[in-house]
Each structure stands twice: as C-alpha cells, then as structure tokens.
Length: 227
Image (cartoon, rainbow, N blue to C red; front, side, top):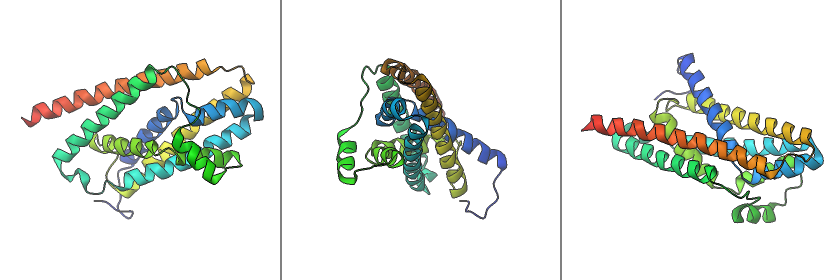
C-alpha cells in the first residue's frame, strides 16, 4: 500500500479528487437540516451568514469523510468483502435514491441533532452548520459506504494520499453546492419556496437512483464472471 512518500499517477489523483467533488456536491443537495437552515437563515441574514453555515457543515462532513476513509486500509484485500461492500453500497444508494425522489416533507432537524444542539448551544453561523452535521451520524455511515464504492470501482486508491485528495474534493463539492444555494437564497430574498428545495432534493434522488442501477449492473457482471 502506498504511503505519503510514494509517487502516484497524477491522473489517479485527479480521478480521486473529481470523484470526491461530484459525490460531495450531489450528497449535499438532498433536503436536510443544513439546507433547511440555509433556506431560512439566508433569507433573513443574507449570503455571508448562509455561506458560513455551509462552511461549518462542510468542515464536519470532511471530518466524517476522513474517518470513514481511514477504516479501509486492508479491508479490500478480500474479494468476498469487496463484493459484500459493493452490495451494501448498492442498497444504500437505492434507499437514498428512492427516499429523496419520493420525499414530500422537509425535516428541519432530527432528534440527534436537537440533542447535540441542546448540549453545545451553537451561537455562530459556522458552529450551527458544524454542530448540525456532528449530530447526524448517518453522514458517517454514508461516507463509509461511499468509500467502499469509490475504492471498489478504483475511483479512489486505498492509500492516504488518494483518500486525502478525495476527501478534500468532497469538501470542495459540498461547499460548491452550499455556496450556490446560499447565493440563490440570498438573491431571492425569501421568495425561494420550500417546494423549490424539495424539487432539488428529488432531482438528486433521481441521480442517486441511477447510480444505484449502475452499481447493480456492475455487481451483477462481477458475480457472473466469478462463477
């Protein structure tokens, strides 16, 4: 396995960075506490406040992403484990795709987020975004399965340099979405409705559903070739 001092193909690093960026962007679109907070706060306090909420959220998401990526040093040496993780990734993508495609409500918070906010009392925009992701352990589970998907499809190598580039790419992608959404909310001055956000979430759900179909097709080919 490569370490920090090993030389990697720049193209492989570019692929890892782009994979992280695309994943981070799409993963940030669905309806959730952060987007609802930006929708509400951005209309009242403007672009800068909304952007700082997004920056806090992305910072904690990159931490979760790094923790998820760190757990896969030797896991994929077993082909059986690799196939099992690909199957889990497919199930997660399918579940999220269907969930967001057919979503009809916009959750402003969750019980775990409310609990940690009650304990930490965030007073700044940055900490509001940071704490709202910190209180959502599902983000860590999501990035664990994404790590399995990226490594098994060789979009990210199982070494620290590739993982770091991919995690930073995820941060760039996520921040890109929140910056765009914050700008959109601030320019609309409260005219952007919750239904508009819900439609954006449904569009991202369709993308995740298509990704699930792609994973299913690849997994089926692998199982067929293994016989």
